Length: 160
Image (cartoon, rainbow, N blue to C red; front, top):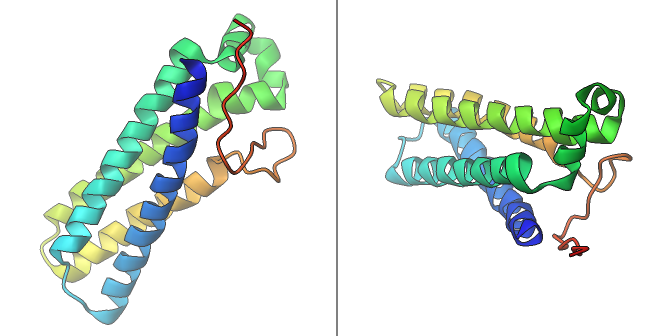
């Protein structure tokens, strides 16, 4: 079960990242070009919100119930805070994921409630843009020495 959910979480990160780039770029171009906030903007924002929330739910399942990494960290949080890998997976990755969910949710709600198209694009740009930056910081890119993971999802082999 752990491996399957981890693979889905790994694949979904790319969906979330692509949607983040698309909605941020559309908000930027809409604001810069004075374009109306279209139904497509709203639908893409909703898809982004849904994908982020699904990613957070999967991440919470991994974190709270299935991950051997967070289980090891929870056994001794003091030791985990001194270990870069355990600290990243048990605290930093989780916290940043929750922050992204809040940023995207707030951006979506605020852009929907904005009184005009320019403000809709502006609010979407700010919220989605910050969420994108946080996502880029939290992804365990392969070049990150201690916490890096493969770009393509690979299931972990279970010892059971």
